[in-house]
Length: 417
Image (cartoon, rainbow, N blue to C red; front, side):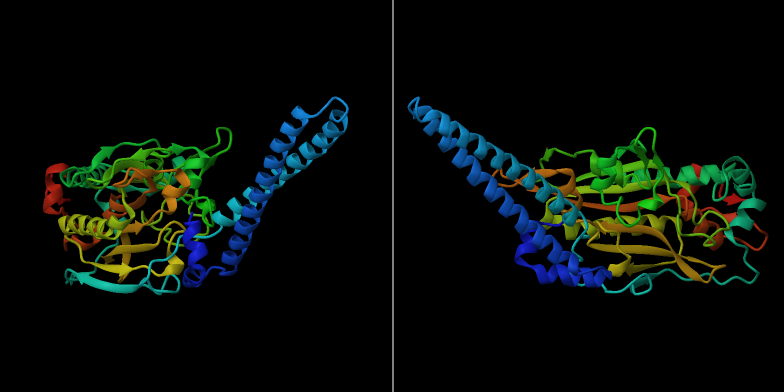
């Protein structure tokens, strides 16, 4: 949730953020009205309770003759207090609903618009030139015994697959390399639960407009996570952290699950858009004033991983309309996919400022010992989709694929034949 104090003092900034996202700026006014109504209801309730307390003293001091009439008045006042408390609960519920309806405030400098309105910040690496007709990742994966989509569909349905032989080793190697780099940069490795409670999923902002992407186990009222960002955000929920000496950094290795609702007909070939994949995700808790610098560090660590797999990529500044509800700014690294002639997302790093931590009750003590809301950030360090770019960019004329040097110790061979 956004900071209500900031909203009261800067409503036009929040309206502009809504416009940048392509969302309704009228929600700002609805929240301001709900906030005013809730404060008015609290004031009414407080005044009536104070009156009730004073009246109680008056009854206690009254003579026997006066007491019956006063007791009758006390009952009327108690009924008014009860009504006021009910009104206060209703006003609070309306405020909570209005508050949760507004996405995080987009950071100044982020581009406006939708999915296609990103800004390219940098290109890295040379696009390969082949003197043969390159195969796509699935043709390579099938011919080399790395990927089995047919049996994945037989066992689980469309958009499922088996990683087989060296394909499995390639995925494990990617994630192991990411884990090693995370540890070297001060992250605590975690293997988190992949089923979370509704309040944790809602706290991260994933039960909004894109809730249809999430698998929900109704009998248990638990959600399968689409990223380990979710359990790591909930890890310190309701806690007060010590952040004055620097951020707390975690790296979560987990399987991830996405329904891919609304993607019918898109990327149906291969493992670009699937229902289950593995990922190592970075997650940081820090003081809000440190969040921008931490965001650049996360992007730097992502770039270091991309350098290790030796693929050409570009860095983009994602437009406001393509941000998740919890992100104030997001940078993606997109790798070149030769057979598609375009770049596809491999990593994403988001600065969620205090949006998630405010929902989840994650705070820290400032220099004066006063609790303040923390900031949270996240970033992808490796995921199954990376195999698409590795196979296509490192393929050779004889149908083999060169294994990036950094992955050879994990995969066990330098060429996939």
